[in-house]
Image (tube, rainbow, N blue to C red; front, side, top):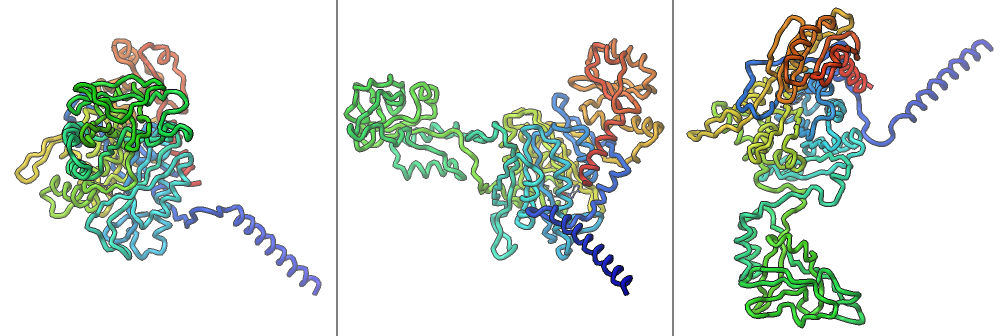
Length: 609
Ligand SMILES: C[S@@+](CC[C@H](N)C(=O)[O-])C[C@H]1O[C@@H](n2cnc3c(N)ncnc32)[C@H](O)[C@@H]1O
């Protein structure tokens, strides 16, 4: 009997210990935020025993202008592309723009672990979160310090995406912009949906946290003179009609240059107090044009009204209609520097005011312009590019939307690098080419796209669209001229993780395309058994396969006027070769393939954790 009780007690104590352990585990788990089932991502599991290399499909290369840099299409699952990019382009990307599957389960079919995720899949949210979480984690290290991620999404996964972004992008601010992408509306839930979102994930650095840092310049030059002419005699209604006609989507910001704060003091109503204001001076006008800016007025000088006539000239002071002295928003110096932004407004006979046009505006969090319609400027544009196809890719974005989103961050960066790892029909690459055409820029794009079992999207749409945009295409009878640009097409390939020296040596021989992609060096100038040399615009790349046979290579280097980056085969991550490192023409030495193996494995371990 005693024995029986003892063994029961032992059993109970064991159960209690187990429960306590479980309780401690549950307590240690996340209590706030996104919690989901973690189905394995097969594409990630593949990285346990494999590495990813790039292999160029040479026949797909397009070279239309030698002065411009290369754009790229990487074919394969984007997780594999991101794994390679972590090795080749760590901290090199200015903007990541992505438009992932929205997980609606309607029409749009997305594939997870080789299976389509349907509307009625009980784990569809968990699968989507897993898929996105891993890819967001794999992409964040690619961004430069001031790099930005923009993600398109609709209501289906918006709540989960926001939490995921918050989790993965600490130190960034996340702004949601509503985009009217479908002006005619779609019965989606209870209401007719006309909008989706663009989420801006922007690092909290002074460049972006300073007030008005994302201001955009309005294209007002063309209309400025006409508006000014109109202002001469026009009423406010006429002015606003005029503005709407020329700037239908957003009103240009025109307002009085006079500050509405009174300069006076309660005991001295209507007059300036506390010394002279540097903002109190007259504008001098003749024939409704500002011809000069007068000196800052002495404290004792108080003009009797806002407009004072002197011969042919009028002097305009910042005085309101009640005779109160106020001040201009700008000091004399700023006013003189920005005369072209100022307009004379006639208020009555011999009475004028000075108005200022705001040349810069802060973009609003509602993108309402008609040019953002996905049907008009996405699908229809694709139909024009692919007139022979009865059906085209269904989920393309408006090219103007992508262009406006990325322009906010790279309008002044003419050499920016843009990545889209859900590239679909390649709208992002098209937008980058258009931006370069507009301002003679040399921005580049990397498009990651799949050829999955359903459709060869990468070659059929991503590649083919960029090719046609570069080469030009026929839209009905109209020839659409090409936009200058260059393109290289790579496939991602899995190779068994090289564990022996022999395998490492073989892998090094397969790395040439990946190294060329990393360095933008594609002109093979020398091919020997022991080494290869590729020429690039800034430097050349040498790949040495036999660490003991560097003499021949060094002879070539010494004869060349180019600078060299050298990759040499070694069984370790770091190697030291005095003969290479002392050569004046060699700017950098690295080993292959161990650093690549290590970085792919590091990504695998981080994502698996
Ligand atoms: C909504 S579409 C993007 C459309 C694109 N923004 C455009 O304007 O054409 C999403 C794309 O992501 C691709 N995709 C989904 N999962 C992927 C993966 N794991 N790797 C690469 N591409 C993937 C799909 O094939 C689809 O083409």
